[in-house]
Length: 87
Image (cartoon, rainbow, N blue to C red; front, side, top):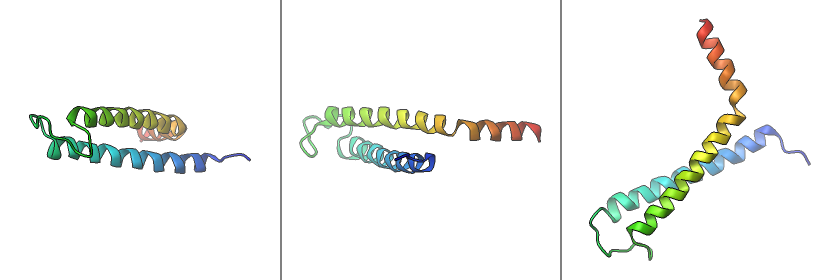
């Protein structure tokens, strides 16, 4: 069974959206729930450092997926850039 490029883009976009929501959620936790100087406070069993690690790894995943997204759309990007420069 061959997977189409549009299917790959669809699933990639879903994973990107989930990663973005994870970044937002962990960012809110770090900023509002466990701000700097929160000491030994925990949220769902993790201290600020643990949430920071999760935030970092999700950010790394998100960045990697964005790069894959750009590679998959590279021909479209080039075509748009060429069209803009000729106007």
